[in-house]
Length: 119
Image 1 (cartoon, rainbow, N blue to C red):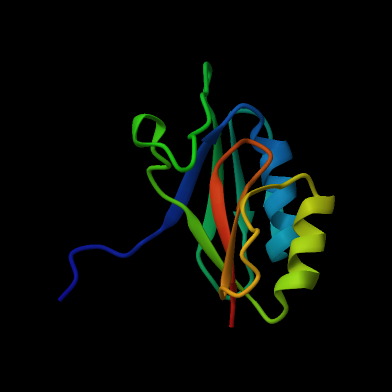
Image 2 (spheres, one colour):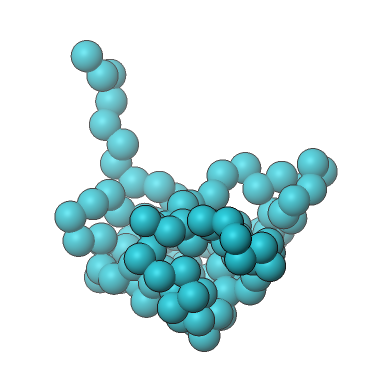
């Protein structure tokens, strides 16, 4: 028997509302809240939350001295279409050159790594 249930994944960032808007455009859902803490309520799944972190320093990928700490894997039916969309929303490629793989790595506007993964 589990001791707990995952409630929410929280990302530190300099602008919670802006980063919630980025992920809402990528994943859908509703952005709730203003200020220091903003929630993204996802349809039929767990929520993401975004917390203002003064002095936030984005992770560097790949780098042992600036490790990513965690990343999101996002399942997509078409890597090329999803890539175009996330780049238009402000993501930047980190490791997306190898088109033979089933995944591509990007950074969100605050610098957190995430992968688009073919499903």
